[in-house]
Length: 345
Image (cartoon, rainbow, N blue to C red; front, side, top):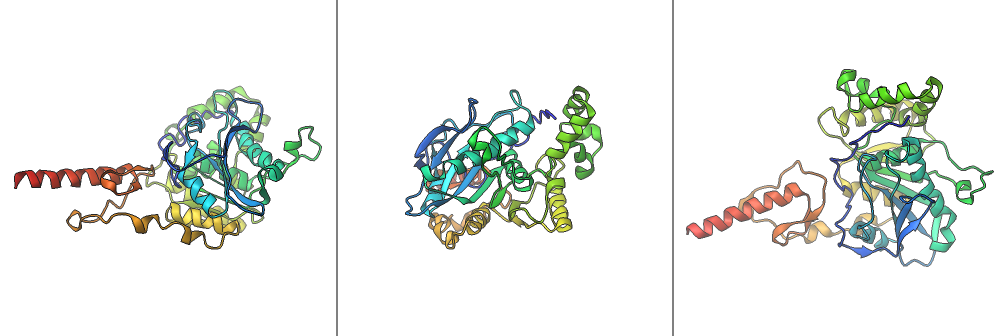
């Protein structure tokens, strides 16, 4: 089902600390090819550990039609994971104008298999591998967590003989399934108002019914979820009926209860990061990130920062560290008011 889901995650922000291009540690290995296709590349950050390090694999958002890692060779998130003794990989994958969605999912799986195949080379622990992402990247992580192992012992390519299974999966603004036929019921909207419905109808008309239904099953994380999967944690969604809707999260939670899967809902990215590292066996992960405590306090007369903020991540004005563009706008407005008050005096 070559579902051209053209904007899954286009509005999604970096989440989980996806940092600006020139912030944080530089990758130890840049644009490492994990396959033969141009976009099958990854950056890899390695911690200084004596023994094999657990690994976190990150998948970017962008609706499977956008997003890349080319200029993101520095990462504060990778630096934090490395400081905790965890290796970090940022993965680029093919997009929908060159590959079908199930093939893109297998790009994400291949990156895991490639790193397992090269575990000795990079001093990685192949038995402790987690994944996370935002929007489309969160969906890819969920797909990997719920799909059967793609390891093929008879494959000519030795990379494909490796396991694709995860130790833990997490992410921001996840979709419950990429079987979009289910979306009208989940989102409680008519078919004609369902995101990407016209694309689903188009590809249904182009494929034999048997093949179309096979791909629906392959892309259905709800159907494939079971109690044997790895622990998972995703954030809540948005209060609407779009591609980041809380209704997707509600359906995931309900399905997890039905099948006994280990699924939790996070409050923020800090909780996600702590969860991922704890599942990888990092005991003191929560104590490794004192960034909030170091932030310069806001003037009392400004009141409280906005409760609802976007998920992007940028440098804040006035020396207040890093945060969302919503927070940056609030700070800028208050600084402008203060300057105006000083001039009037």
